[in-house]
Image (cartoon, rainbow, N blue to C red; front, side):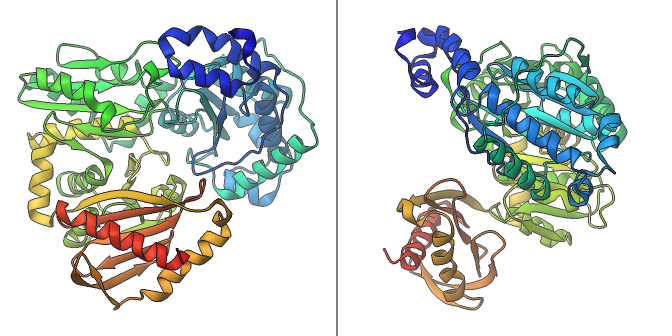
Length: 542
C-alpha cells in the first residue's frame, strides 16, 4: 500500500479513514513533505497561512515563507517596521525571534528549518518547543522579542499545519505585514527560488510556560492565588480537555494536580484520535461525562483547541459557547472586579453582550471578523481599552492581557467567576439573562455557483444594504419588524426593533454565503434564517 500513493492527499485520506489502523502511514507523509518540490499559493488569512502537510505545507515551502519573512525584515520598509513595532533589521537581529509549534506531525522538524534560516540571517532565535499561541504572544512581550513564529493551523484537522506570525506587541500580524509576506513568498514560489535545507547545531530554548505565569502575575487581571485557593478548599471539580494539544502540561504547572482536577487527552497523538480538534459541542462529550460523574457542588469543564486559542465551557448541565461567555466575562470583570473600559466584539457575535453593556453604560466596539481587529482596544496605550474582547468562534482576551485570543485566560477567568460568585456558570448565566434579556444566536449559510466567488458575490450582496435601510419594515415569520440599525462593517447586518438580527456576508475562502442570526426566542430562529436566505436569493437573483 505504501508505494501506491502518488500524493500526500490520497495518503491522508487513507490515514484519516481509520487512524488506528493506518497511523503507520505517517512515514509516507514525511516522505512527501521532504521530497515534494511543488510550489503553492501562500495566503495569510485571519490567523496565518495553513496547508496540508506534504501537499502544500512542505519543507521546501516552509523555507520559502521563512525566506520571504527574512526578506521583508531586511528591506527595512518604514510601513512594515512601524507595524512590527521595531526600528530596523538590526534591532530585529538583536531582540530576536521566538519560534514554537503545536503538537502537529513534524512540528519540531519544521521549526528547525525556520530557526536555521533565521540563524543564517544573523537573527537571535529562541526555541519554545510545543507552544500554545497565547503563551508565545506573552513570551514575545516578556522577552522584548522583535516578533514570533508559531507553526500551527489552530483547530484545523490533523492533516493540516500552519504558520502564524506575531509582531513585537504579541498580537496577530496586520495586513501591512501579511500582504508583504504573501507577495514575496508567492513571487519566490513562482520563480522557484527555494533555498536549500539549513540546519542549526545550537538552539537556545526558552520555558514559555514560566514566562506566561510571570506575565499573568504582572498583569493582575486574574487572581491566581484566589483561583488556587478555591480549588484546594471548596467542594468543586474542574475538568480540562486538552485534545492532545499544546495546552497539555501547561495548566498543570499553573494550577497543579489533585483530586479536584481532571486532565483529559494529554497523551501524544498527532491524529487527535480521529476527531476534528475543535472546541465543539460534540467534542465536549468526554468533559460532560466526567462532570456528570462528579458529586461536587461546583463544577466546570472546558475544552481547548490544539494551539490553545479557542475554548468552550460546560458545568455538566449546560454548555456555554463564547457568544454567552463573552457577555458573562464583561459582567464579571466590570461588576465584580471593577474594571472599566469598552467591550470589543466581532460584528457576527451575539448582541447579548450589547444588552449587558448598554445597561451598564459600557461603550461597544464592533469589528470585522479576525482577532487582529481588536488590537486598537487591547494595547496598553489605547485610550479606549477593552474590558473584554471576543468573537463568536470561541476566542477571547481581556483587560491588560494578550493581543492574541487565549483559551487559558478564558479557563482561569471561568474558575475565578465560580470562586467569586459561588455559582456554577449556568446559574450565573441565567441570573444575567434574567436581568438583561435572553438571546439565541446561530449560524448557517448556502452554497453559490463558483463563478460568483470573490468580488462578484460581494457586489451582488451589497444590494441588501441598499434595499433594507434603517427604518425599513419587513416581515419575519409573519411578524412586522423594523430595521433599527444597519451595520456594514463586515457584510450586512440588520438589527431589528425587538433586538433580533441577521448578518449576511460572503465567505472569504469558499463559494458560500454565510448567515449569522440571533432571535429572542429559540422558536424564532427558523424565521430569522428564512428571512436571511430570502434576502440573499433576491440579491443574487436565484
